[in-house]
Image 1: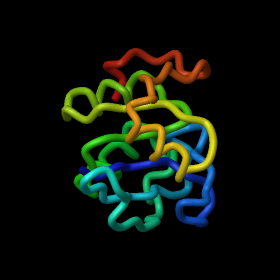
Image 2 (image 1 turned 90 degrees about the horizontal axis):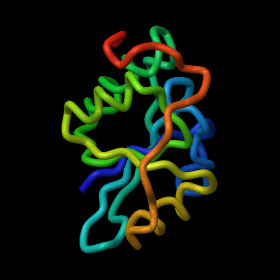
Image 3 (image 1 turned 30 degrees about the vertical axis):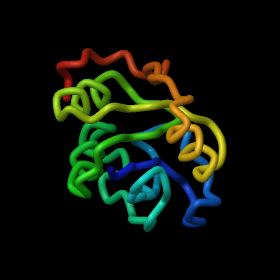
Image 4 (image 1 turned 90 degrees about the vertical axis):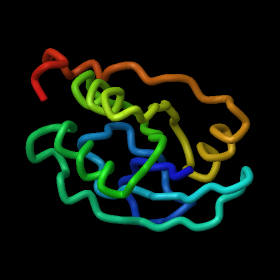
Length: 123
């Protein structure tokens, strides 16, 4: 499986999960096999809120991710991930801890960011 995690700093697994999907500066992409992190890399988010999180969804999906962890996400981006069959999870804290919580099945879904009032069809 391949996790895509939103981050604002390029500190790898020591980065903090970004509070807002569409405004994150980077994605950490982690390949998980047999419950362990096999590889991880940080990639820039070239779609950083140019047109909202919905554009960033395509950017993240281009990395063939199977699951997403973010601190917050608007409904449009959530719907776009749902349409792609990619589950999303919420977390606040360090990336490495987020992955451990994910692997332990201790993460839940994510609420829409309160500043997003757009319809899910606006993407």
